[in-house]
Length: 425
Image (cartoon, rainbow, N blue to C red; front, side, top):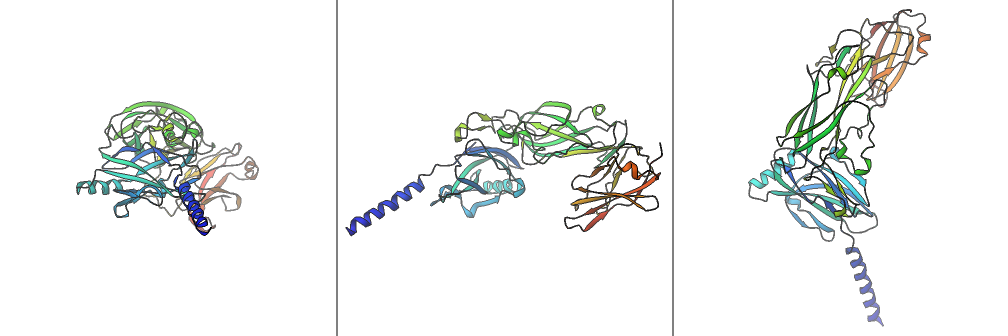
């Protein structure tokens, strides 16, 4: 009787162990990619079979070892090249119990992998992501093979750096109403080769600014979110072939198409759409995440930058490059400019990196307070309310300034006072 009870307990333990080890293996696609030896690389990955699992850290290493008692192969601690920086993390739930992951390999990791290969080790290294169970199951490790290459035609088409450049290299460009905006272009660094498809858009004064997700390239998003980003006024489209050289310039739209008829701050957006790219395509069926292939040509591990210009009265001038970071630089209206008291008008200023809030202050020329308003950073403009016209009834000139504060309300920067005219109609 005693022996039979022991046997029953042993059988139960073995059954429990077997059930824990029989957990479905998490899979990834693609399982291997070519990456740039001398710079950064970005790859769109899809993980499937994640029921009850959450993704945690990701590591790069030169050698894999058995992860027992966990499932899969994990990094050999002696060969770790680096971990995925938090600023590059772009994991999103997708498909059927699936996850998309934008693997952005820093140049520091590929340099270490290249040095290891030069010392006689393998020319491939590994990206390993760990998954933990929410129900007490074993941890799982899933590896992607990264093969060192020149980052040319056989690497995924991915943007690794984007700079928007305007003639004169001015950080904030100011033009008068009706004046043409100087030409500008996008300077790209990339891996792979293929067609880059996209468009130029403009955010008009008063429109809601894009979120960081709106500024991602379409190929960076999971399939469910593609087509959901906020759209703005389209200026032009482009569809260009990028050769495997790693550098290219994309001309901006015809300057005559850029609006400059209303005072305010305008934002030019570079929007990159997804394109077919067999080197980086992700097969959903291969990991049980759905059907079809997700195109990832044009993926990027960061929001694309925007170009800002300001329309105001007077001659076009650029903000000085050496402006003090401790001061808030006012943009429009300019000193001595005239504004129409009968309609709302816009105050704008350069962004202060330390600011959480901006306080816009208006006084009479003698210093009597007229109005103040709070604006949350990073917004750097304010459009006056209609009732302000009543408060300006006896005023022909007003002063304005902007005070920047941190999240606790402490002042971190301020502008000088600026006087503008509000002539009686």
